[in-house]
Length: 289
DNA sequence: TGAAACGTGCCA
DNA sequence: TGGCACGTTTCA
Image 1 (spheres, rainbow, N blue to C red):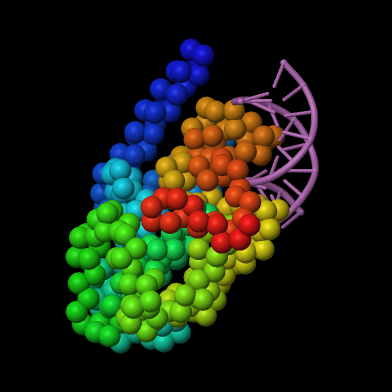
Image 2: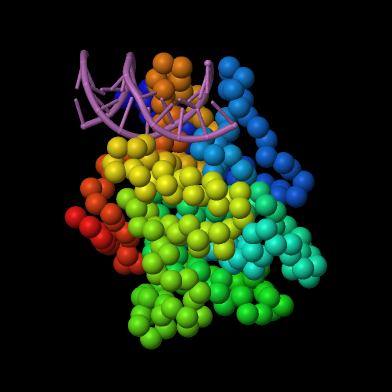
């Protein structure tokens, strides 16, 4: 017990160091420092979606209690910007400049798409709806973006508002009333809520689409037999450094296990039996039994 | 019940 | 094809 306690303390200290690295680092001047374990193995993000470093604001979110929500919201706003430029179409100069100013890169977009789609816990349906609604609000007039401000202004409570905050989910505000995507374009899987194929084509670029499609189909064909993916949002998933002390790290070659402190919270849970979606209230909603 | 070992799917 | 990591089984 005492040993494990020391281990925990050590890892907490490492965790804090990790958090400092993520939260308070200099975004512009200091690139992501690759750490290597004793074997020389770089402790890189494990899933493909995590191999691309994310925007600093997303890591800053780890410092707050609303980390996951804030990240999803930020991602959504970027998704909205991405939606302004259809895949395969060269953006006009104004839009390109604006995106350049925002530091939006293809890499970043890939990360955001992964962040949205690689989440077994899922982007809640209501959240997804709200995020897309925001995207649609930006579509008619790209000159008045102000997205950056929107990202900063959105609070956790805002993105997790009540159902009345999502007019598209109600009969009054539904499809066509500022929301360009039909509800049927959402794919409900045990791994979460995704955008359908055609929708992804609109919202994301081709490469991101292929990646997302692969993950979607992977999740959709899960049937409870396929391996689940890391959510990428929980603290363990956000952790980028192996502790090198737990049994999983020590027995990496034979144990075939990820570091215990990086084990996804969602994967620790038993997979749900049916298609389940989290409601804004936090209660699970099962589509099929 | 948790840890360890092993099988195996997924991806580069 | 090899490495990584999730799922299952076994064991203390």
